[in-house]
Image 1: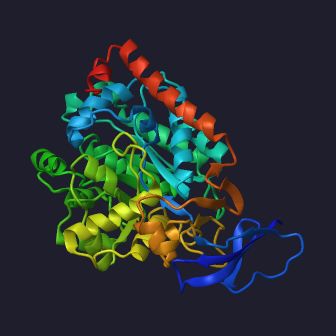
Image 2: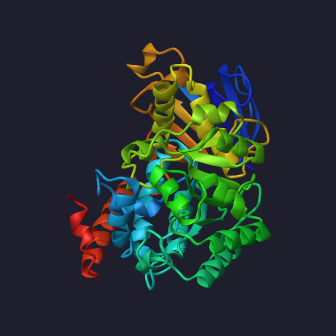
Image 3: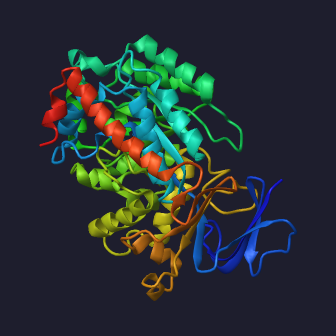
Amino acid sequence: MKTVLIENAYIAPVAGPEIPSGFVHIEGDKIVALGAGPAPAIPGATRIDGTGCLATPGLVNTHHHLYQWASQGLAQDATLFEWLVALYQVWAAMDAEVVKGAAGAGLGFLALSGCTTSSDHHYVFPKGRGDLFAAEIEAARELGIRFHPVRGSMDRGKSKGGLPPDVVVEKHEEILAESAKAVDTYHDASFSSKLRVAIGPCSPFSVSAELMVEAAELARAKGVRLHTHLAETLDEEEHLLEQVGMRPVDYMEKLGWLGPDVWFAHAIHLSDADIDVFAQTGTGSAHCPSSNGRLGAGIARVSEMLNRGAIVGLGVDGNASSELTTLSGEMRQAMLFQRARYGPTALTARQALEMATLGGAKNLGRDAELGTLEPGKLADIALWRTDGAFASAITDPVATLVFATAQPPLARLLVGGETIVENDELRTVSQDALGRAGGQAHRRLLRLAEEQGFTAAKEVHS
């Protein structure tokens, strides 16, 4: 069993007091000890010098759409519904090659921002385009980070009163069969798992009530989690009031979509009663501030949610609505949004860090394994260099990480004790190759869209 010692680091374990100068002792893929002072003398141990560095739990991304790496920079000034209408036709052309290139680039970019665990919500499955779900799973396996893909779906196209064009929706029975197959094929419930699957019909305006109910029944029978978009815009609320006569959270309650096995993306437009329901039922949410700002969707009531005991994690959201957004940067963005809305005490740097780590682990049902630096937990650790020439003017390393516009250099990123990033460079895969593959995926997607006659592929550039 491999022994790794991080020494001389400032440790912010999230759970428990911070340690100004201490060590983390790793055996195999788990933390066995941490504390103040010098690391123990263990012959043969790999020693990582953390002098001038801040050690935190690895960051956890709880909402993403990796395929959207290939459609960045499009529909730049649109609302959510306008943006979706423009891009659904582009996404309808994607194939497994596009998804593999986009997912590799997106996950690599996340790792370089301190992310050790990422979810992904993939809900567009055009016919005859290869195994898209397998493609993103392979990209995560090659990189080596923990992956929580959500087998998404849409069964309610325009002809049934939904928002997406019929070309990108699937049949109800097919969705349930493919969702069950994804869980049976890939889900690993073990403590050290690097791959867990969730089930996630896309949104209330693209999915039938019947599918929502049956997807929840399937997920609970399989013992996996549930995820969907909710309360992202007022347009969504108006759509539901018109279609079903209910507001989003009330509708979810009716469908059986509240509870400790559920986390929602966005949850911006919540009432006081909605927030209390989230807290009482243990329902989580993924706050995606940059995407919410980009689309003009609004500012989630995160401070109030936390104060009332609701679970909130962070997500960067799909790169088509959150171009080149780092997960580390979302801590700052979340903090500033809350302060802009509620005042300078609304969200502290340490609360933002907790959302990005333990809050995310709770959303994914993995707070027993991830989200804090404690003995017995998995050794997913980010080591940030906070002693740079300019950063040295800030004496609080956590403030250096969260307040600064520029992310501190990532000295080391460990997943289960294995190095994924060292000195801002990916070590498990070629960083340059991933970047090139992401660019190729973008060009291929637009070419395929044009070849299939989706003229929106040209129009969304403007």
